[in-house]
Length: 269
Image 1 (tube, rainbow, N blue to C red):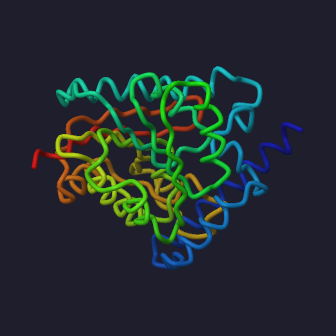
Image 2: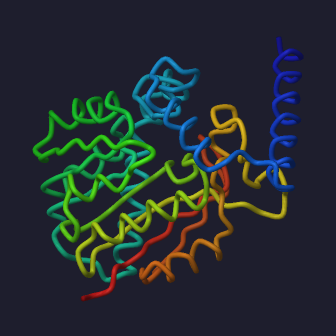
């Protein structure tokens, strides 16, 4: 059994290397195709690995360790606080948006510290699941479902300039491309109030080619769809109008590796 698992792991690594290599030399799939494939995956709860990848309680890596699920949210709340202190962000958080709310671990951890959580996701099942967990708290909850091909509809559902804090974890690494990730960050900028704060996690790439983008066969390389260089993402946030404040680098945790958390402030009007 161990030999079979090792063989499968080796085959997967070879397949991943091939697809990364093809992407690097210009044979990646089109943006439209990657968007369509990602939309099909995230709106299909029966897809392989969907529950774990969506961070639903009791599924995937959380099936036998409920504390792991709870600690995802707790760790992100702690990291948010570090970034908020560095940014001098001490305002009341009346309204917090979580982009890619998934199973609700982050929302549950943030709930005691805000009046309303807006949960955005392409999955109707996930916005309901997160709401189920939040129903036992005092926080108000607004579920917002978007289409992968039209994330800007969230601006109409939520309202530009109405959000105190915008958070997104284990999401930008899963979007169809790095360019699509920047599209999401443009929406975040528009949603935030002046002096509002964004806290977002990316997956970073290194000199190791196996950390580079896999722009083909979306559902077979989900966690490798949109990596960035840390400096590249920092500079891109500047160009969008944000003031980057901090970056926290996490080389490895119980779920994966190569994570970077950015604290971004929207300047005063």
